[in-house]
Length: 387
Image (cartoon, rainbow, N blue to C red):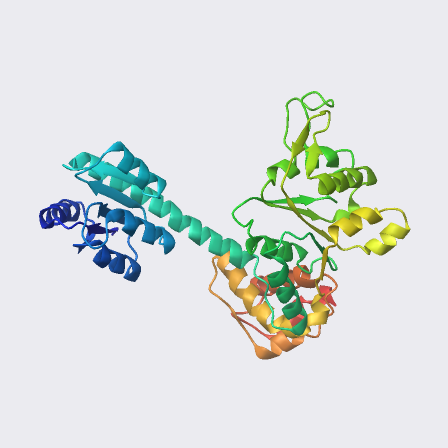
């Protein structure tokens, strides 16, 4: 049942609205002034607030401003018997969902509340989705190695510094990139990911910078590149060590000038992008072998974060095991399986050449093939391919 807070200094208005909305199966709370209403709003979660403007002690505009300061996210519908265009515009500018004049029209009230509830539901769903996304990219572990990575993320995330993330395949370099973005001032803007190794060298420039119609055979229409799509946000260049030298030159120019030019075009487009790059290659060796530009390396590596292999943080295996058991069982719609202590100790003995990615696959295999509680025998039986 949706909860609505009515703040109005006129008892007759409060009671009339309560009777009408209770009949519509809404749960109603009443406040006779702004101070009381704000206290109720802080102490409970309401789906919609109906608030009069002209009230003693604290008027409706002040209540609205306070809800904004407290980040309550509850849609506020302003009502007034002294309404005019300027008042309505001020209320909407300050974040009100809508403005309704007295005498109140029943149909207008019900429709506006329904629309506000739709917005409230969308806000709630967005929060849930963000929590799921945040959990998906959570860095699991309490080892000193992972503590250092998290500490570095906390320091660098609020800045706009470019970051180069290194480490073997499967260690979770993309998780680090996501966490940096989530904790940055750009978190509400796009996070655009490009796997440089997965895109043919002849297409990488079009992918990054876009192209104009007719610039090459299959360019049937104009297309924005990843730099433009990431404007205001973060561009994650994964496996940058596999990028072609010609594309490297253009990326270097984009980083130097904050401008790009689409393939087949001559117009310069200004972009505001934070670039995070990652690689499993030794870029110093790639530079020596003339496969990677040294000047681009220095542009990208303002901050270096090295993600440890799982073998370097083997003490995190118990936490990781429980994390993946919970996650995979939830994904498969299965009851959460237990995992015996000696099974965890057996998992710690494995040499993980594929790192976290390999470890997750092993846990999934154990969940599917193992018993109700994963035993040491299950681990020995179903992890032979990992040894």
